[in-house]
Image 1: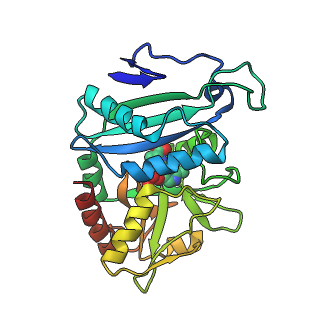
Image 2: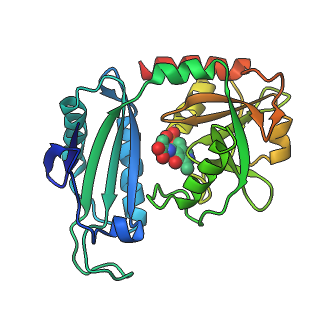
Image 3: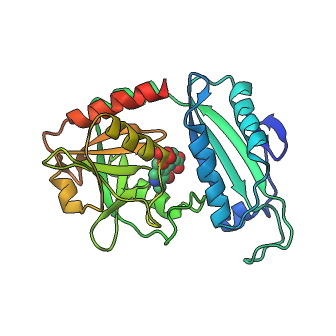
Amino acid sequence: RIAYVNGAYVPLAGAAVGIEDRGFQFADGVYEGIAVRKGRLIDLEPHLQRLWRSMGELDMDAPMAVGPMRLVLSEVVRQNRIADGFLYVQVTRGEARRDHAFPAFSRPSLIVTCRRFDYDAVFTRAATGVKAKSVPDIRWGRCDIKSISLLPNVLAKQAARSEGAFEAVLIDTDGNVTEGSSTNVWMVDGTNTLITRATSDNILPGITRAVLADLAAEHQVRVDTRPFSLEEAYQARELFLTSTTSGVMPIVALDGRTIASGRPGPLAGRLLAAYKTHMD
Ligand code: PDD
C-alpha cells in the first residue's frame, strides 16, 4: 500500500511523520474520510469544503491549494488500485517544539491513505440492521469541527462494541440524541416524518446526512430538523444511522430494546436504495 506523506508517495509500511508533530502531541489536526466507489471519490467537493472549514475554524493553514489536493487524493486511489475503498486525509499544524500555543512558524503536515472497503457488505448488513447502545456525550463544544481529537468517540464506540453493539448513540445532558460516535442519527416518527438534529456546534455536519436530506426531499419525505430524546428513539417507527462507511444503516435494537418490529423499516430501505444509486 502507498501513502502520501508531505510531498511524497511512499510505501505505507515505514511511512512516518516527526514525533513532535502537533497531531501526535496535541491532536492539533483535522481529517476527512471519503468513500471510493468503482474508483471514484464520492462527494469529493463537499468533503473538501468541510476540510477547509475545519482548518479555518482552527486557524490552520492549508498544506496546499484545493486543486493540487484533488490531484493528490485521486493519485493515492490510483496508486493503490482501489475500486471500492475508504480514503483518509489528515492535516495537522505540523512539527514544532512542544508548546500549547500555536508555533510562530510551522508547515502543516498532510497525510493521505487509502484502503479497500466493502460497501456491498455494508449494504447486506443493512438488510438486517444493527444494535446500538446509548452512551453519555462527554465531548467538547465544537463537535462541528472534524478534529482528530477523538478520545470520547473512541471510548463510546468501545463501550458499544464490548456489548456487541455496532454503534454508540451519544446522549446530551438534556437527554437528547446528538449523533453516533462516528455517524449521524435519524428517526422516523408516527407520522412518517424523518427527524434529525439540526447542525450546530454539537454535531458533525455529515456529508451523508446532507445527501440524505436532499434524497428525502426528492422522494417527498418530510424532514424535521430538531433534537429528539432517547425516549422518543426507543418509541420510533424507524431508527437509522448515516455515514460514509455505514451508508444508511437501520438500528433494530437500542439498549436491548427492540425498535418497532425489530426489522429495518421501509423508509430506511427506500433511502438506502436512493443512496446506493447516488454512489454508483
Ligand atoms: N466519521 N458524526 C461523526 C462524529 C463522525 O465522525 C462522522 C464520520 C459522521 C458522519 O459523517 P459523514 O457522513 O461525512 O461520513 C458523523 C468518519 C466516517 C470516520 O470518523 O471514520
